Length: 192
Image (cartoon, rainbow, N blue to C red; front, side, top):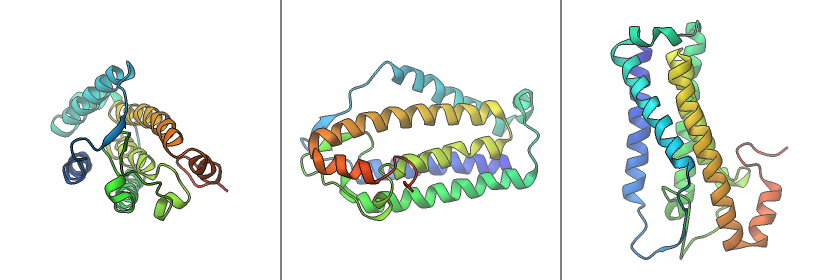
């Protein structure tokens, strides 16, 4: 059952990203500043390939991945389902709040607005927090440190790079209003 849930989780995440990438693709010429690729993108690619291949092996032939198994009790594995569900709820709410200000990669568009309502009232990067919840949950769902660890490592590196680039762009675009926003909000969790 957990193998099916893991396959549905990854498929659902890919479908969600694909839907919004097509629905909210910026029109030609709308991008003012775009994220430049770094050497870390190659590491991300290797981690993504490892995550996908190990997940496929785990789902189709679990005995091949038994060497990395973790003795997690069923309730902890079900916690992975709840974590993923919470991540998808946060992701959907955040996407709806951003609307046309969302982009599949950090970039500044000509009509970019500083969004500070909804989940953005307390957290600057709720979508990235959702990514960590969703793609961190395979560790619990699979009860496999290699499968879950590759998803978590890839997501953590990607999120760290995206936040760095996005915040630099937002500071350059919005200046003091964004700096004030940074001071009153947390990056991934609300400030106390």
